Amino acid sequence: MGKAVAMRTIRCYLCGRRLTVSMRAMSTTCPGCNKAIKIEDMVVKTYVPVVELQTCGRIKITKRGRIAAKRIQCGDGITCDGTIEAAIETDGDVSFGPKSSWKGKTLQSRSIKIAAGATLLGDVKVPWIRPEPAGEKNKTGTKKTATKKVGAKKVATRKTPTARKKTTGTQS
Ligand SMILES: [Zn+2]
Image 1: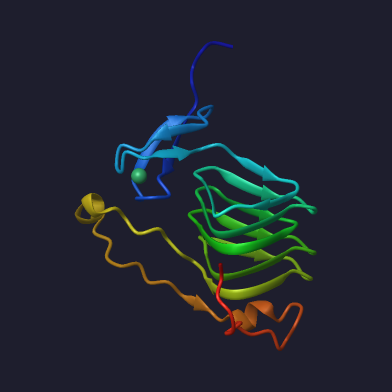
Image 2: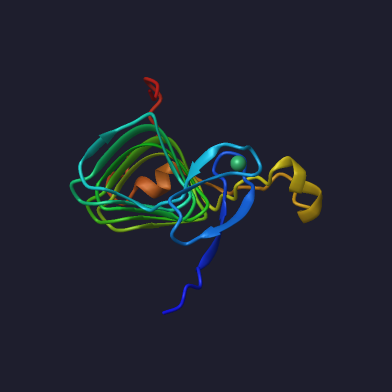
């Protein structure tokens, strides 16, 4: 009914600028960095090898889904029932299902939920808040945001008590 367009506020995953967009928009140009950014929600159902997976929306990885990337940047959070091999950076929440797994350099998110049976390998930094862009720093008065570092060991104990940060090899 009607043509009222629902809007939502998002943050550019590249520069941190806040902007308001239509709920139906799939992409837009960020007024902060003038780059095209994606807004759409994504569902990963198969093996998806990419360099970077970026969206201001949500990312869902189904049981058979697998992402192998250097980095995932995401606005609204990630729900993972499959496999992620990538550093994760999201303003939203991350949720791992019982048979899911994550391996990466760092996982930064507002909050994290880990079901028993999930396997996580890497540094988890939660809660994490995306730094404000340079122009907005004074407005909000935020300095460098302190992130509480959660030991990877603690997080990984759900499956393997001896799991520790992998020190050999590099993420590619
Ligand atoms: Zn931007």
